[in-house]
Image (cartoon, rainbow over all chains, first blue to last red; front, side, top):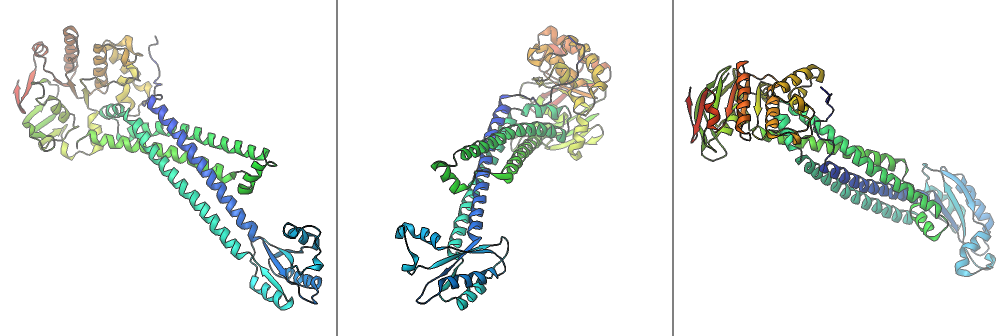
Amino acid sequence: MRATSPISNSIVPRESIAANALTLVIGIMTFLLCLTFGAVSLVSDTASSWKNDIAREVTIQIRPADGFDMENALKTAQQIASGMKGIKSVSIINEAATARLLEPWLGAGLSLDELPIPRLLSVKLKQGERVDFDELRRQLISAVPGASLDDHQAWSDRLNTMAGATVFIGLSIMALVMSATILTVIFATRGAMSSNQHIVEVLHFVGARDNYVAEQFQRHFLALGLKGGAIGGVMAIFTFIIIGIWTGQNIATPEGDQVTALFGTFSVGLIGYAGTAVIVVLISFLTAMTSRRTVLRHISTLDNK
Amino acid sequence: MIKFENVGLRYGMGSEILRDLTFHIAPGSFQFLTGPSGAGKSSLLRLLFLSLSPTRGLINVFGKDAASLKRADLQDIRQDIGIVFQDFRLLDHLTTFENVALPLRVQGREEASYKRDVIDLLDWVGLSDRLHVLPPVLSGGEKQRAAIARALINQPKLLLADEPTGNLDPTLARRLLRLFAELNRSGTSVVIATHDLGLMDQFQARRLVINEGLLQIYD
């Protein structure tokens, strides 16, 4: 036996059943919270892209009339629209493309000359620039009889409302999961602390200052929180990557197309990964602070001063 | 060193369990605190250790009024008072050496500065061959001596011991009593709470007897 040995044991025991259970609880709750955050981040990004896609294009429709020179009217409308600020490009939907659009209703081999079919111009907008649709509409109507501008406002409004509702529901679910996580971590930490109360008492009675005792436990529980949080966070990131790979591999299948139609490419993005890291840090901090508070409260009951 | 003047104590709204206690613990003194079970010995020890506040009366500790002490002062004063609990209260995950060194470690001192003192003290209490053993492996007597060593490592001015021989056989109890006597000769005041009359008969010392909340002193 050695005559002396350096003090190597931590004042707070490193391993215990309660500590392992707490690590597991933190891991599970972090995993669930990160998954929820990733899902909300994905839904939010997708809703935003829906809105952007529809807001980047408007349509000019020209209705035919007797003796009306449709080709000339289309060119006039193209010139007017191209001259407006904020317009990126204006393209005339040609006859063949128009026929394809109508094919599901009117059948193949349609001749547009035989029917009074309206013609369309697709107008692409520059991102981030406002277009004066009222002025465009006024110029079109005055120069081209039968012209009308569809800026998709009604459709855009409905989509905005739907996207907003989807994000709101996602955020509400996240708030619930976050509340459940916070409460679970707090109560699990208190439970783990209760098995260490005798250590708090001994340290207090051998003359340790309150802050010293609190710091010992705070450090220990911060490490537990980081360990559990890292396990949950890494599992969540692993899950994002697996789903991303799965959707990538199924891109040409009906299942993959369905997922892609809803969520685009399944990628939580930088915000999703950064959010996961923030969640891990916050949960560790919450664990440490709960242990500190529990220690200080217990100490205050030891001295009936 | 410690003065009690007309001290009374009650828990909550109950009746007073200690009444009109007036006494003085002098520097370098040795006293037994005795009385029947439930008489209030442990409560009086807690008052001496300042972990309880009296409901009335004055306690003066090392020249300071206990009622006016702040929490930080309290911890400073506790470093001058060693306490040995009846149930030892050793930390099972720390070795004997680490348990005894704990009061110095919590002061932020480096191990090198006290290693020799801890080893010497453990040698003095007869535990030099149990330095690196965890408490669950120690016998009752060894645990008791380790608890005493922990209470003494800070070289306290006052040592309080609650039933220190309660779990020991008579031979070991006599040995512990000699340890306390030797400590007292080196200048530390000692208060031993016990109801072991045999133990008290072995050492001529002042007796503080509590009965039905009242204190009688036999010098």
